Length: 362
Image (cartoon, rainbow, N blue to C red; front, side, top):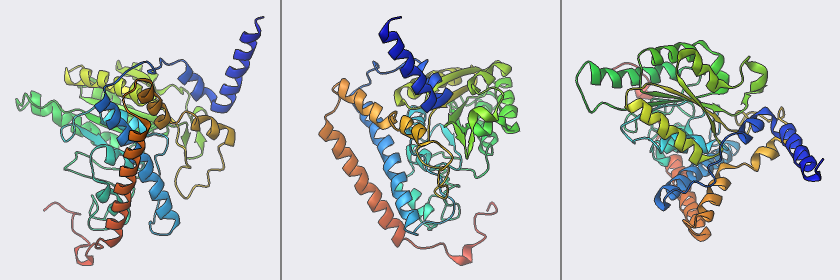
């Protein structure tokens, strides 16, 4: 046997042990390393992903300093999914439905960092007027239909938005009604009834919706492969005659390209798509989680696949921007986030006299 073959086999076995079946699936996916975006798009993606990462790091700092309370679920490691999907869509035209891990989705959708941070501090200047907190971000202006504390809650809401888009066009004759809805949820949600029921209805009525599974390998402390009889979630689309696609969720360009294909199908009337984005969260389930259930070797393995590093390598390879330009963007974002913290700390608390405001429609 060729010694190089032996070495390659050993490397594959080691990779599999550290990254698990998740990494094996990623290795079989087509790489976008040779895909060249234009400079403007590349920098937009880099800026959005960096904003998400730095924002979440600042949230952890504020939480551990006792400035932020309640449950806080961070998105570190999954930025390529939020940026890849949302930045391929039309802002303030298409719609987005999130989960309890919703800060970065909100930022990608255009909700200002000041409003998101204010909401996490429970202030009146928050995007949900301080009533929602970390798990319930909402912005009508930016077409963010909410974060949801319970898994699967947002999928029927997203389905309703997609139905509205189709109804306006088909029943009310609005030829400009071609908005698409992206419904984000995790791998743990895919064993719940809402998931199957909404896939069935979306395909039955050919609704313009993208079901985005952020498969980060762990549902709190339960490994994905132990929780489902078919770990490859994208294949479940076949049961409904729906298009399903497996995507490298650590590669923003791959996610963006898959989203563009799904958008084309949705806007042309071909109906929904199920995208399974294979990703990994770098922190525990929430900031209250000591993250002792995952092996250190596994976390170290996935840290080397950091989506921000991968994008920067693509930018450097294609000579789209210098390292100093990227560092300058990071400094701008750090200033923006520090400003958001100061703004939130000094903002007013909600008026106790308005406790019941926003509970009922006016």
